[in-house]
Length: 113
Image (cartoon, rainbow, N blue to C red; front, side, top):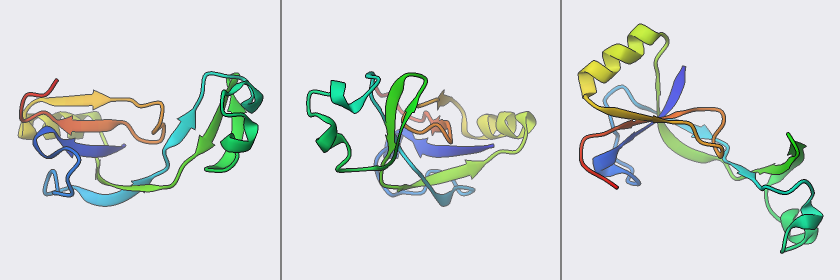
């Protein structure tokens, strides 16, 4: 399973978070809590100006945004994930509605909140 990989101490920077990390890309999803673009305050014209693959999923409108580069790690098994966590220490695993394709695995090496 592929994870977007970040490190708390270097979050948002281009620094490689782990030696096994490789560059990858994901497509962020812009999801709104309305059923049609006509319900948006900005109106449907503005909604269709950016993004692509505009659609309705589970009663909400969505669109794909510009692909973004990131660091990724591929952990094939549960045992591989556990070995990775044992190696790096604490981690935070996050599922994001904007990045459905990959969960994020954050190496939690410093305090943040």
